[in-house]
Length: 94
Length: 144
Image (cartoon, rainbow over all chains, first blue to last red; front, side, top):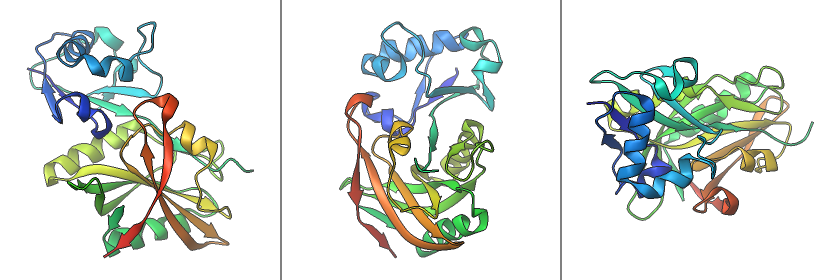
């Protein structure tokens, strides 16, 4: 069964679980299953019109799903999905 | 509060000197304490993908984060924060830093690097529950 790694800022919405197992054949199914189990996650992962937030990166093992088949990316048993919010910044001066 | 081991503290400051005049960036690994504080025992340097503007912008490739997170998990460590440097600029968060911060409950450590030498290091906790109400709170750093 694929497992989803939950980043620390979102664990308060998964009962503090760092890993959630979700039976799913695709990334889309896995994320849908995750928010079905933990509905409070939805607004932190998705915009109001149902799109994944731009700063939320989703990796299947070591590959960004955007460069695979996106939500249609097929999953195998033992695959790991990582939800990784972006890390960026910098001083505003020039 | 953020507790940082001496080696991790030295490493994150040194990294800023190494990459000067560009911003450095990296991940802090350790554990979340029951009292709400964080303890960082490792500073893992990362590449800065903002080669279009590295003197005042940084971005960590999520692929690096995935690897660092997996390796940390194998050692029993969690991602507790991030660090970056401000070359010839104060160790204070900017509007850019806040806009691009999304790891609530983690520490964001900034070091000013003046003329190639690490100067002040400050830490800020990303507080709030949602994007619209997020803010940085000053937090004490304890090096031990």
